[in-house]
Length: 327
Image (cartoon, rainbow, N blue to C red; front, side, top):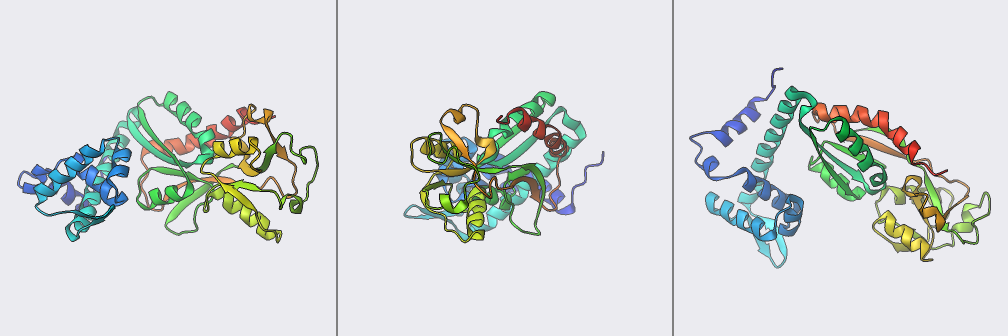
């Protein structure tokens, strides 16, 4: 296999490893990684969390880097961090270098096949109920692959896409953009969930207008679930009464059990154990037919590991959901 690296990428790699590059000999790869995270997140704390380092270590690496370069890269006013002119220029350099190294690593992995390799995936929180099990099966089939899974909300997924932080993304409603390449993956029906002793628990074909006065426990604005529910109510000329916002589905289920309201959840977030205290209401217009999508930025070159995992997802995902479906 011929490793295809562009002239620009060859130039960047040569700059990093050149014997004559004075700066290249002083700056470590770890310093580049630390700076790139700090510059992207504009936070020492968040950079430390992302890199699994202590904040003092991040601060020390940044001070050493600025000393080696001879210019300040960041400035802090109060608690707000911003990039200096030199920092802005070096941020692009660091992204170019790290991106080229990542692509080179991917090409090496392709040569090795699936004996080794890395797979970085970010999924929305509703997918957390099956994604780890799917990855577990994949790792059993390909034990040499190192997997990184990020579970977060839709807003953070979109941010990670912009910064090209992962190989693949699993999301409920991808934004309409020519810069993205997403394909439908699995059905993700949205159902109305209430306490098991709710007054409407045994009713059939409940009109949507009858639950419009209920207090709804919802995810944050911009989440895929909330977008779907707000659209369903708007189509019916009804206003969604949001009594509380919570950041994850487990908290919402606890809120329902505690009598704080009802909610719309992905059916796949409900387990048989949940149904001892919860019930799915038979509401007209529900379940909402929703889907998960899998994709990546358009033009991104996928490694053999990522391509193999996509095939694995389509083969094993439906079987996994069927095994865990509620009766």
